Structures are given as structure tokens and as C-alpha cells.
Length: 185
Image (cartoon, rainbow, N blue to C red; front, side, top):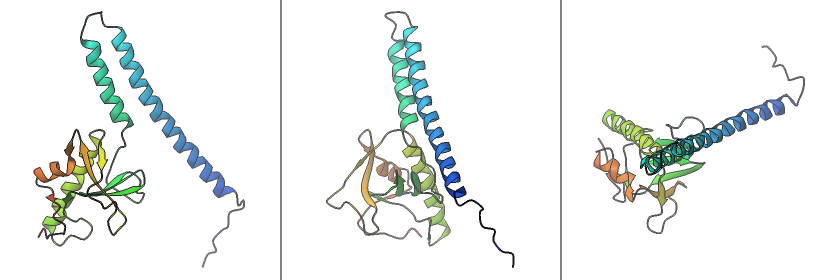
């Protein structure tokens, strides 16, 4: 059996870790510069329009929408690292906090009971990714419970006063939460 070679320098691990942190910091700086450039470009466009023209207000609104999209967290379906991602149609992580959408129930994808449940659950999961990435949203508590028995924060997710859970229900990808899970098969 071949022996594992020990690193010659015990600080190699620390060097690699610090290099990884520097790369991550560089990405954050690039994102911030990108947000800054959107605002500067919109401001320059607005300054070049003739006085009395309604276009600067339109450009300002478009720039504000672009800035909100650039500064909103971007979601994907969760992998190994779970910081800001979607677990399934009614559960997601936001900045390291696990959140259960309190007003709906969606099909399971982790342990589905039939193919239909899995397929519908995957559609709900992908749709939740799209909805969360569509722009800023609010998280509101519901009732007097802050967490469920699994430690997930119970929240209603809204945008412009409308529940994203209600939107999933209207699209046939979720059910309104009745207080208990019901079968999908």
C-alpha cells in the first residue's frame, strides 16, 4: 500500500486558503464595479438628453431596475454548498439561513413517492429559482411561529404585495398550506 506523502511545509494549507479568499474577494470587487458602472452609464445617458425630454426619467427607471437585479442575490438549485440557493419548491437558503415558504406545500424531490411527484417538484423548484431571481422580494412572518421543527425560518415571500407562494399555487405547482402534508401521487 503506498504511503501518503505529507506536505513538506505545514503552511501550504494556509497559503492555499488565503489564495482562495483573495480570489473570492476579487469576484466581490468585480461585482461592485459592475453595479457602479451601470449607475454611471445611466447617469451619463440621462445627461446627454435635451432639456424637456421625458427620456431621462425612463433611463433612470431602467438603470434602477438593472441596479436592483445586479444587487439582488442570485439563486440556483442547491448543490453541496448551501448559502443562497433553492432546495425545492418551498424551501431555499438565503445568505446561510434556511427558509421554508410558510403559505404553500410543493411536491418532494428528495424522497418522492412517484414519478409524477418528482417531475412536478422539479418544475416547482425551477420556477421558484426564476421567481426569486426576478428581483427584490420581502420575507414576512406568518402567525406566531418563527421556525419549524427542522429549524427552518417560516416566512411568506412577497413581491409588490403578492405572495410568490400564491403565484406557484395559481400555476399548479403548489398547494396552499393546510397545516399538514397531503399526498401528490
